[in-house]
Length: 478
Image 1: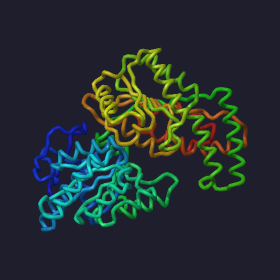
Image 2: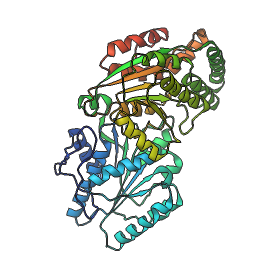
Image 3: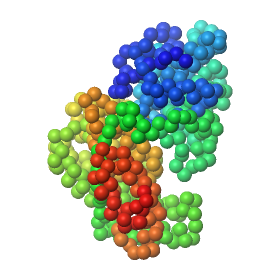
Image 4: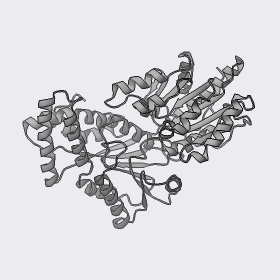
């Protein structure tokens, strides 16, 4: 294998590769880290299939494009040149980020998303040109939502057989409708995800790995990424928050109903009534009133800071934003803007692509001190300048937490380390019977908090905050 080279740790791309034919080539300025080289070698050893499980921020995009470039070079040497590349990602902003990176590898991508009039004609003409031998290569970058539509599905039948498909944030592609839309004719496949295992969906995980191929070594963990300086070290501050009296009453009611649901339904992982109650309780916890008070205390002596991200929302149901989430978003924004004159704007699913780019520019250059977001900054957004994150709410899905910490820890010039404030609601004392339910549910949550505390620069201090919860629920072994 030729010695490929990669982007600087900042993740910014500045020098364009030269490929007038739009075929993938390795930029001369690029030097790959050893784990990326090993991942590439293992994908080829696995006969052009596989899933890369790499920590968010560790360079999955670069690794994937290096695979495409190496694959093209090898295929030309065997007189069977690769002719197509299809990249599928979950969100619109990721299409533009992939396009920026792809152009550094000499590619000239068709961006197939949003209005079909903007891309279908161009895609048709390029596919015909490749099939007729008048063009050597076609690159298409699309979204999951566009993939399942007839407008793209009708074109996939004309995609060259000697093609590679890359699934970004591929855990999403294990969903039944998406998985069934993936082209079976394309035999060279690569999946990328820090968390390929789908939460409470073993069959979906199986479908994903059946299509793309098994998880390849080396798995690249958060600890590995920090040691390799692919991510920056961090300070972790768990912030314990108590419920108000009305919230405790509602919490107690939901917990008692959960106890009955467990008694009737048995298995906690396959109980629809229990799942519905867990969602309701997660929303209550996510929107806890005292989180605004805690935020006021955190920010009161941090008014001169910048590059701060505020995560709001209950986070309990992907794709859905509740009224409570919106109220929290508004309360956080009001507190920061009106009380502290802290320069922030909101960043939500309703924010247009153009507005998002402008907000990212203002955030990066310090015009805005912070962004207040609901969920849509969880996956794929590349803003390495983030110095501090305040998590007011998060789901129990470990993937969300993995995605968020990767966002926060991306390296950037002058960024030596990051800070993370993580609000944790203390379960109220509801008696012995409820204690057992709380212990079972809290075990998963505390594993996440403890893992992140252990890898922090201030691990002893962070662990000390969590210790009373571990002692109360006899979870000291975590």
